[in-house]
Image 1 (cartoon, rainbow, N blue to C red):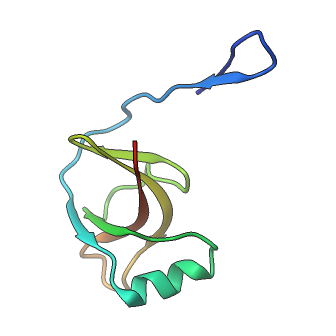
Image 2 (image 1 turned 30 degrees about the vertical axis):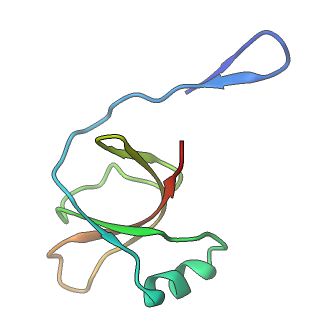
Length: 91
C-alpha cells in the first residue's frame, strides 16, 4: 500500500496476505537466462503448492529475515508445483 507522506512523496507498507509452506533454491544459470527476458535478475526460485493464485509480479515474499521480490511465475505442464522466480532484496 502506498500512502502519501504529505511532503510530495509516499510511504510504502506491506501486509500479510497468506502464509504458506515453500522451498527456496538458489537460481541456476538457466533460471537467470529466463529472467533476462524480463530484464530482472533472478537470485532464487521459490516452490509453492500449485493451487496458489494470489502471487503476482512485484509482490514481496518473506521467509524469516529474508525478503524476495517476485519477478515471474512458471507453471509446469503438470501442476505439481508453482515456481516463483524472485530476486532477494538486501536490507
